[in-house]
Image (cartoon, rainbow, N blue to C red; front, side, top):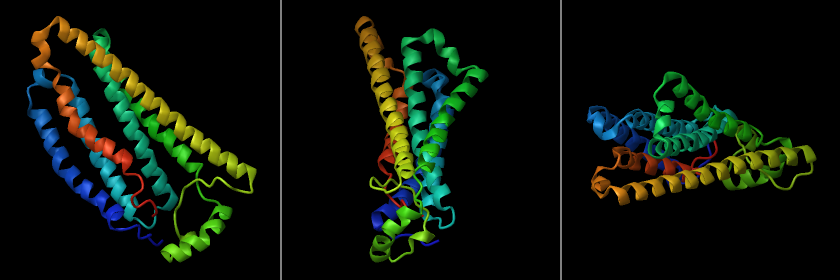
Length: 249
């Protein structure tokens, strides 16, 4: 299967971030493991998982962008990792909220059964998004509609490409319904996680302000997890915006 030339930046940017991901994430893991447990607490396991996920995400981003065989399945898997990143940030905010606002529930993140439940919760994000992406596959009508454009613009046969996407004007009602379901699922999960981020973040900030107003001496002793996760969150959020590069394989 041919690979579309989408330009220098979209093609090489994922490789660039993958390279640095395998430099800085192992360093982060090393620092977390060797740090005093009192500074980071139980959040050290989360940081290691974040770093491992970021490296895996970077590899998938590069492999699917370069591969000419995986086709639609590879693109769906890549899209699923987008939502998996939603899930891992969701766990981050839930943990911060429980640790600060509901400390009596912190055992939810220390006992094996609960940890396995959180793993299934995180995995459900990828399954959900993967299913939504599978509804956005191009059928024969879509390929015929775009055949001329791809031949002129990219000099490739669209039948040799793995593509997923949404076309708003189609003659077949069942195809339009399928696309609407895919868009609806994508919007529901995106809006839901953003609302939860804002809500949980707001609660955490209020709790921190209240705590530091009562105990000013604690201002210099904030949980190390906040500072340690900044670099992970920045790289992860960049992945969220890095969705258009090498989109065809």
